[in-house]
Image (cartoon, rainbow, N blue to C red; front, top):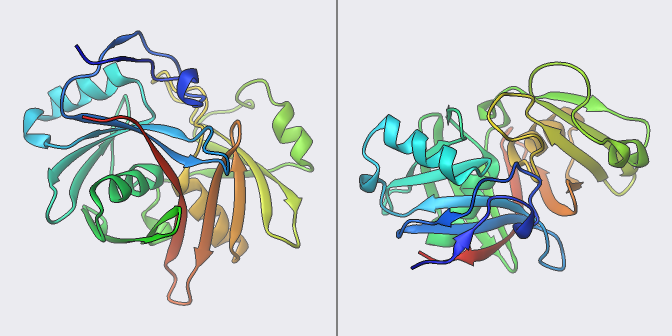
Length: 240
């Protein structure tokens, strides 16, 4: 019997808890965008053989059961073809699933419906390069101080996905952020959100060092051709 995994606080992730259950064989559980000491990071499930879940219904059911903000189904490990699911829907692109999958499978290319995403390893960091316009729409809401961001006890009023942020040190590009999907899928707060970090970096036109959630770290680096690198640390929680 494989260990029980709870899709929430034990792995440093703010996403909603799910019931304990035995993670099926063939699924790795990672934490992506961990802090400098290896803590926190956003939980991710990676199904190494997507053929085990051949249709939309079975994939969505597993993503709901796992309860992570995203679960990745690997359809072709050689070509890096992947399918990304939240507990409620399929995503054409997302940051932390791609960083985590690239690290786990040692990929330098991932194929998505929106286009090819390149990946590289640099010491303790895994980086992907993509176009910010591939990211799903996110409202970017600036606060006056990092303390205000940290003081939030839940999602701010309103509807739709929101990324709240404030400068910790503007000259150094250090940002404090939190992310609230505000959708009915059990994810109240997202611990670390690579796509939103890309959008913020693109809007500000500069590289960023983002502390999100409880202490996850996301790095971004815009390129002259309009692409964006996003990177962070990845740790394996449960091996398939």
